[in-house]
Length: 135
Image (cartoon, rainbow, N blue to C red):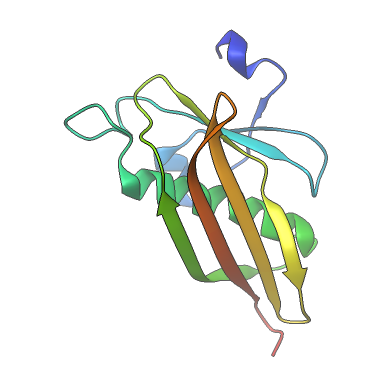
């Protein structure tokens, strides 16, 4: 782990796809965890730029972890996610996000994330999550 990830611990991922594209790292208390994706050669396109699909996968992973925190680890799934790509990331960058719970109803969670490199926002994601078994 590099010096810029000092204080971060590896997130325990359980989904096989997430494990395949991870690892991601986290720090902070439940409900206020910050996540980091260290961009490596598996995550970039032929131009060395972080693939948009990988950035959306990281968003789903990080916002999903925050959703899981917000519902005390109850089963939940992504209903929708809207994304805005603002600036590129490249191999070696560390993309960081502190997901925010915007609203919670009995059956839905609304989350957002502002993904940054060195404090500069490169990507925005807004998502809606369904709590399974809650109608």
